[in-house]
Amino acid sequence: MDTWQRRTGYYLLALGGIMLGYALVYHWAMATFEGIDRTFLRSLQIVVETFTTTGFGSDASSWDTWQTNLLVIVMDLTGVVLIFLALPVLLFPLFEETISTTPPTEAEGVEDHVVICAYSPRIDMLIDELDVYEVPYVVLEPDRDRAAELVEEGIEVVHGDPESMETLEAVNLESARALVADVDDSTNASIVLTAKAAAPDVRCITFVEDPDIATYHRYAGADQVYSPRRLIGESLASKVTTGITAEVGDAVEIGEDFEIVELPVMAGSELVGETIAESGIRERTGANVIGAWFRGEFVSPPSLDARLDEQTILLVAGHERQLEPLKEMTLSDKRRRRRGHVVICGHGEVGSTVKERVTAEGVPCTTVDKEDYEGVDIVGDVTEKEVLREAGVDEASTVILALSSDTMTIFAALVVRQLNPEVEIIARADQTESVRKLYQAGADYVLALATVSGRMLASTIFEEDIISYDKQVEVVRFDAGKLVGETLAGADIRAETGCTVIAVERNGAVITDLAPEFEIQDGDDVIVAGPDENITEFAARYD
Image (tube, rainbow, N blue to C red):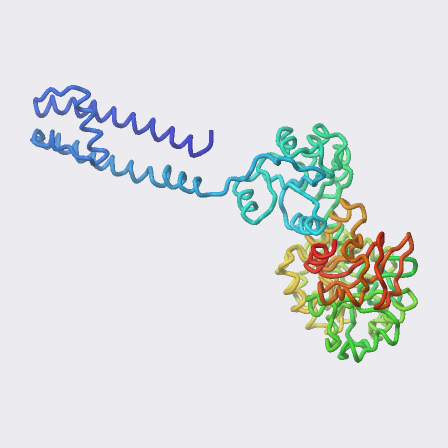
């Protein structure tokens, strides 16, 4: 029985009891004060007429005493109160329930899908990836109101308890390609146990906030367990060496000796202030600029007139011999000479992971946190200049902002940038909405927690069929599809979709030197780079 039905039952029982009580009192009052002997049914009729305000003229002339009139006044007021009480308690909820969206409780006819328990920002990123590949999914949402909202947003959702065997059977778990649990640490383990009982062969992927819990998830049957904060900590740490060495790292290998890599343009480098045309990157190195972030906005392909500054991140493709000299062009001589002192602001799961990775690479670092945890070098508020100066921000090559609050991170970025205009600022963001603000505050590189973990999850589900970045750009491999028989110049893919074809795999060999007259053949795999929405457009047009 739902809440509205229960309320209605209680209301009707109370109303019936009150009316019967008033009928007994009225029957007694008429006999005692007016000397008129009414039948009980007649007394009940008068009470009903009074409560419903339909009139009581047949008895009004008989009310001569003040006691009877007072009783009638009280009955009038009681009836009005009960009517007005019924509006918000019964009628309004009934009306709302009638016009509201009712989420489904089962998924019919879905196969080879992904079952997701439940909805979160990183799941939103995963859904974007699934939509690109037209992979069906079902979100299991235990909160009915939230499920209704998701239905109205166009999300494929089923309302139910993800820990329930019946609910998992209702979403056809046995035919699913994977189950993702993203509720909380204890609930996720319970979901896996239920899922393995319902479908022993289903692949289960879970998230944990506390990395120490990961062992229990695996014991419960999880095939992969991810710690989002550890993921983003490792991603932040991988960016630190960008300002220290001219060796290209963190690259995505497409073919033998052919890679795609992100290269931040450092303050003081020879590229700052030049347009892409003036920089002569293609002519001087042979590398191909396929996209760029300008203060957090990704553009692909970038205009030749686009001007580079210290907050530009180039997305380039090329052979290692081409990328190494380009990396040299993006570095600052001043940062090279500093050889890398790193300040890590925040020593939670993210900050401690960064310190662990950075220290392992032999890079000196100083950790700052409000709390005196083990491993914290300086205890203090990272938004205070004196604390940052004590940590050596004035002479640091890189500052990592690994704080738990986006608001605090944005303010800390402003303070750090004011203290050291040339330092590289790498920041973590919990919410994707904060990414743009952090770039505006002076950050050079921002990683959103939901984006990193969501795309890592997509990569796991697709078993490396997708090559992902930490931002809103993707490198994806597609079947040639409708491009068979087209030349690159004839298809004009950049103009049509905003994506760039960076390589073609043919008969096991990856072809990277693509001339405009290159013709795509049946059986080719096309490797494409571009923003999320452009990749979706490419898939819809050619796949």
